[in-house]
Length: 78
Image (cartoon, rainbow, N blue to C red):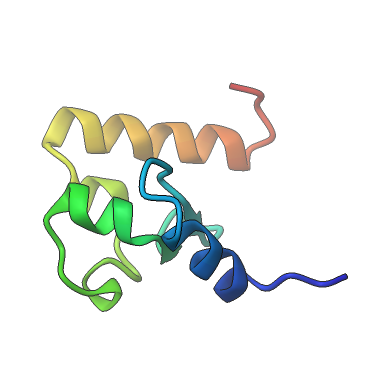
C-alpha cells in the first residue's frame, strides 16, 4: 500500500494535537498539517512551503532546527 505525503497531510490534519511536516533534502518544508500552520500563525500552506525553519521560527530556535536538519540528512542519529 502506497501512501503519499498528501494522504498523510490529510490524515494529520484530522489530529489537532500532532504536528506533522515533510522537508526536502535542503531542509525546506514541502508539506505540513494545519496544526503547524496555526502554531506559526500562517493561514495557508503556500506560506510555509519552500521555507526553512530559520525563515519561520525565532532566530535561535529556527537556526537550531536548521542545524538539526543538516545533521539528520548527514546520517547522524539525533
